[in-house]
Amino acid sequence: MDTHPLRLKVQSVAAETPFVRSLVFGVEGGAVPPWQAGAHIRVALPNGGDRPYSLMALPDLPAGTLALGVLREQQSTGGSQFMHALKVGDVVAATGPVNNFRLHEGRAPALLFAGGIGITPILSMAAELKAQDIPYRVHYAGRAEGLLAFLPQLRAICAGALHIHYDSDDSRLDIATALKGAPADSRVYVCGPAGMIDAVKAGALASGIAADHIHYELFKAEQPSSPDKPFEVELKSTGRVVTVAAGQSIIQALEAAGLDVLYDCQRGDCGICQCGVIEGLPDHRDVILSDDEKASNKVMQICVSRAKSERLVLDL
Ligand SMILES: Cc1cc2nc3c(=O)[nH]c(=O)nc-3n(C[C@H](O)[C@H](O)[C@H](O)COP(=O)(O)OP(=O)(O)OC[C@H]3O[C@@H](n4cnc5c(N)ncnc54)[C@H](O)[C@@H]3O)c2cc1C
Ligand code: FES
Image (cartoon, rainbow, N blue to C red; front, side, top):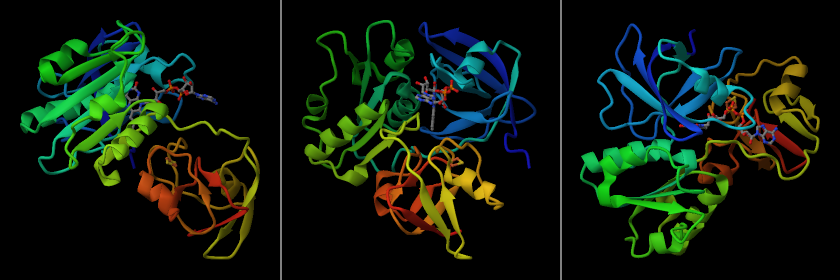
C-alpha cells in the first residue's frame, strides 16, 4: 500500500520571515483532496520517515493547490531542512489530509491562540470561522517584530479580530486579559510551544471555560524531563513479559523479542501504534492523545510513551 499517495509539485515558494517559508503545491494527476481547518498532511522525507505540516487556507490561494508554512528548525534531523531546500518544480510524496485539531460544531464564539509557527492551523481556522460568520479573535504571539510569519495574510482574513503580541515589548500576550469577558460557552483553540499551551489551558479553565471546550495541538513531542528507567510489558494475549530497557522504546523491545508491531512515525504524532492499557500507569509522551485520553490511561502510543509503574499490561 502506498502510504504517501499524493504527488505534490511545488508551484511557488516564498520567504515569509528569515526562518519561515510558504510552499504552494499543485496536485499531480488528481484533484485536491477535501480538507478542513486544522488538518495536516505528512510529507515523505527522501531518507525515510515523514513530517506532518498543517494545511493553510491562505487568501488568494490558486484553485487546485495546497499551501504549507514551514519553520526551519536550527537542530533539524532533516524534515524542515528538506522542506526549505525545495524549489519550484520539485515533487514530494504526501499522505492525504488528517485532522486531529478540528473546529467544533456550533456557533459559540472562538478564541484562537497561536505561538510562532503554531499559526499555520490557526490561520485556516480563522478563515473558516470568518466564512461561517462565527465571532472569533486571534491572539498571535512571537518573540519580536519581523519574526511572525503570515501577518499580511492574517490581516486580510481577520482585520480587527487579529491581535499581535511581541515578547519584547508592552504588547506581550497576557492570557488572562485576552480571555476576559469571553462567554463561558466559548471554544478555545491553541497551537504553539508546550508552555503556551499549558498557560492558555490553565487561563481558560480559570476564566470558567469548560475543559472540553479547550482544544490544542502541539507540534513537537516532549523531551523527557527525567532519565528513562527500565520497566516490564506484559502481553495480555499470551501473558509473555518483555523488559523495556532505559533508552529503548516499547516497540523496539517488542521487536527485539521477535514480535510484529504496527507503527509508522515513531514520534508520537501519527496514532498508528496506539495500544490499549489493561493495567499499570503509562508515562504519556506523545502529541496525539487528548488530555482526557491521557488522563484515562486506557490507551497509549507505544513508540514514545513509557511507564510510571514497574509493569504495564497491554492489550497486545
Ligand atoms: C500535527 C502537526 C502539525 C505540524 N505542522 C507544522 C507546520 O505547519 N509547520 C511547521 O514548521 N512544523 C509543523 N509541525 C512540526 C513538523 O512536523 C516537524 O516536527 C518540524 O518541521 C521539525 O522537523 P525536523 O525534522 O526539521 O526537526 P527534528 O529533527 O524533528 O527536530 C525538531 C526540534 O526538536 C528538538 N529536538 C530534536 N531531537 C532532540 C533531542 N534528542 N533532544 C532535545 N531536543 C531535540 C530540537 O529543538 C529541534 O529543533 C507539525 C507537527 C505536528 C505533530
Ligand atoms: S508510530 Fe506514530 S504515534 Fe506511534
